[in-house]
Every structure is written in C-alpha cells, then in structure tokens.
Image 1 (cartoon, rainbow, N blue to C red):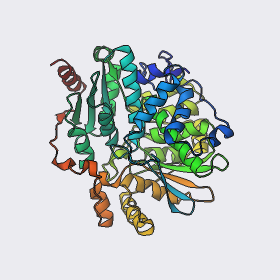
Image 2: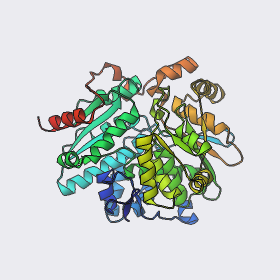
Image 3: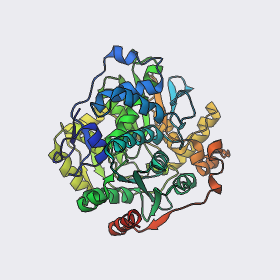
Image 4: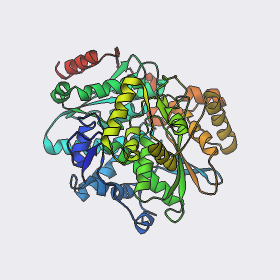
Length: 462
C-alpha cells in the first residue's frame, strides 16, 4: 500500500512513513493511492466479532507490510483495553430508525480516543524498532489534545506539545490537557482560535529546518492513521443494524471533516451508506459550501460546541482531491486561494460530486440547546452540544433507512451548556471525579511562529 500527497509534489510513502510524517512536505495530506475493497460477504462476516477484530480486518489492507498481522492484532487490542464499554462503540436507539453511536467510552470521553489510542500504540512500536525519538506537536479545538496527551504521556521516546485556543475550550477539556504531570507532555494556550493553532502547526511542518531539527511528527487528523482508525466504527455500527444487506445513513457533527471523511472511506470500501450528512454549528463553512459552492471563511464565532468552531477544515482537502479527479494541481491552487484570499469557488463538476456524496445542515445555538432538552425529554439520553447539533440536523433526513448519529463526546465534558439546556449538570465518571482538584500546568504564548518554535526548542534542550 502506497500513500500519495493531495498536492502531488511529495515523496510516495509506505503506511508507516505516512503515519510518522503527518503532513506531506509539499503542504498536502497523504491519502492511499487506491482504496481497498471489501465484498458484501466479507463485511457480513464482521457480525458478532469484537470491535478489535473488526479493526484488525479494516486496518490490515491499508497497513501493508508496515506491521505484521500478530503485532498489529496485539497493538489494536492494547489500544482499546482502556475503554469502559465492552462494545467500545455501542448503539442506542433514539426513535424509529434513528440510532445514537456512542463514541465517548474511551479514557478521555471523546471519539478522538478511537484513533489516538491506536496511533499511540503504532507509533510507539515503530519507534521501538527504529530507536528514534520524535516531537509531536498537535493543534486542538478541545478533544484531540487530551486524547493525544493520554495516549503518549510518560513515553520515553516522545515529546508532546499541544496547542489549544486560549479561553475557547471547555473547562473540562482544558483541565484534561493541563493536569497530567508527566514531563514529556506540555499544553500551550495560544492567543487566537483553533484555526490559528492549526495554521501555526502547519507553519512548523513547512519550516523544514525546524521540522528536521526536532524530528517533528503530527497526530492531528491531517495524519492518515487517525482517519483510518475512525473508519472502523462505521463498519461495526452498520453491521449491527443489518449491513451490508441493507443500507444505513450517518449524520456526523464535524468541523475539521476528519470524522465524516472516515465514513466516506468506509463507503468507498464497499459499505452501503445511503447518506453522509454533515452537521455544522454556527461556524457553517462546510454547509455553506454544499449549498452555494463558495468555500469562504467568515471568521470563527465561539459557540457552546467549541470543538466545531473551525473555518479551515483540513480534511476537506482530501475530499476535494477526489472531487477533482485526483488532480493535485487544482487542489494546490485552491488551498493557496483559501490561505491567501480567504476562499475559493468549487468547480461545477466537483460540486456535483460533493452533493452526490453528502448532505448537510446547521444548528444555531438556540436550536442546539433546544435539542439537548428535547432529546432528554423524549429518550432519557443526555447528550453533549456537538451531538445535539448532529441530532437536530439528522431529524431533517430521517426516513426508511436507519440513521446513525455520531455521539462524539460525553456530556460531562460540556457541563455548563448541558445544565443550561436541561437543568441537569452531568457528573464526570469516577476516574475523573477529582479533575478540578488537580494542579494545572500550561504555558500561554502569542500567536507567533517564532515564539512557538523557540519555546519548543528550549523545552527539548533545557
């Protein structure tokens, strides 16, 4: 299996190389040269298997020779050992033909654990073989950072720096990043929004002298291994509801487009998905793009669903690559226009490709709060504001085909919004009950590349 850049000017890599590289050296994102296909019989055979065994079968054709089968099985099993639900990603029925896929049973209570725990195991194994040391820098709108810190804390051959937008994550999200005491993990509160954090991260990858000096690696959803690990729960959920003998649909709350792109890959692999519905909050660039064809930034407005407060959806580049017939020159030009001019217009053929494959909707702040209250009243399920955005949008697409809405975080990660909507303040699970008693450790830095690189270099060379 070989991996190519969406911008066409970077080396072709193996799975392990793509995972350890993260962002391609031409600024693009790595994507498989071809997508493996499963037959209906192969998908049907997933029924009754453990989540880890399905993950092994889904990941194997993408991994190629990078990991032997027994090693990969062991690493995947270890990755999910810390989840507190035997099904890992259980389904809960909300209404006729409407199901909630609970993705918050991992150690940091968010869907990011499904990918980060796997990539942590894979990277650790690769580093053990090579004897190398790497520096992971990540940007987070809330959940990626805590999941990365949890996956890599205490490892001897990895240093982790997580950038989060100062004052724009929930208190629980912040404390999950700032309270770990291990010396190899550091949380940086950056002045700005998530797009600023993501932009500075990409700047570091494009500063080749710095990148090479610190052996920079990335674990954001720009990393293909992250997206791949999320493909698994689309298969397990669909098979639980009778797939592939009958189609299903998914509604996904998304800001950076990685989670729903994983669903797109599952469909390319042969999973019969009728609708992939993009659910956005008031920062609705993806919804506006599907409606008008204009992919234009309008600034980030802080919301009660902060992990979706994004205007530069990195993984959308991967979809555009396919929408334009895998023409890297067109993608590179549109990414340049987005960075320098604030946006671009999707070509008619590419727009038809997007509309054929995806639907979309948005939820305002008021609608999100109302949905949290309505879902609790009708079903007894307490949901986080990101999940509420998706449930609200999903209601417009319900039909005879089962709809699976992704519940991406535990409601206790956003207690203020949930309490505002319902009067109920969700409690943290027992293993996090003392989170607000733990001392915090963070560094506040300006939105400045030089300041970030200087801080990272100083920390690595005390």
